[in-house]
Length: 411
Image (cartoon, rainbow, N blue to C red; front, side, top):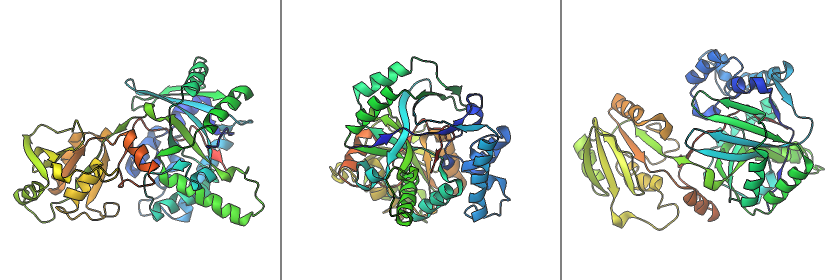
């Protein structure tokens, strides 16, 4: 059963929360981060993207960059922009973009639950990205970005959180992207006990986003355990910071693809090969955003096309039936030669939040092709994770994004 415990978060002063809170490190470019820091000098991107404070030629993975992340974090704490709660608390975290509201609990979850598969993954991790997050945690001596977790909806937990949300929030600010963020601190012992018991009844929790951060936290814990064989299990390194949401409140949007070229083929040759696996219908200059599974949008040669996978290529397998798998198995690999999408520099992945016009521009710049997909569902994610399988890379894009800097877990 899941161990979900309260913790003493390092977090912003209320008047500084909007200025400090920032988008996650991996959804902004270095240039975007630099511009954000210029506008908001307290932005947590100074901690999450410390390379922005070095010359362009600096290796972003060099030891001095990770040291700078820690220096910037503790500077915020020393100056009083951040402070640490004296007691262990849960934190209710609500995100509202005007059309969609979701409410989660910021807490710490157990490394052992990850190792024992109570916390379930759906995505492979890359060693170099794990190492980056390991070095960042070590440089900060803290976990700075919460892992995005999903759990089976629990009516009693939802009622309990709704009651607490009737009080005045500790944080309440509207971010520049139009998402309102609210946080309530739960410090009452009886409420903490109820929440902990409700989570303790859950036999499975699912990583929605943050696989590399979770894996990094686990590897650091394992190293600390090797160094301290008499560890009790209560040490902070045995847990990693997360925000847990009921999965029926989560929203997955499409994760699109852009390929830089047509693998030496003309547009006519490319389309001819696509027709082996898909029904193809031209849509002119009208963008195609798929409305159901098994359908795709294709932009190539300044024109849009509707694609629909032929029936004989459909599968009942939980992974092979995913639209991201269909596109990879029957178009990107056989037609465009993208054998390893995780490492092939010819392919880029774009969250649907970026918009279709940006896809067109990227494809036009290199005479390549763009592909729009129907979003993966939470039901598909849970099924794959329960079966112990893994999705292809970049299968899900959760929106809205959690803000970094609202909660920090010192290890």
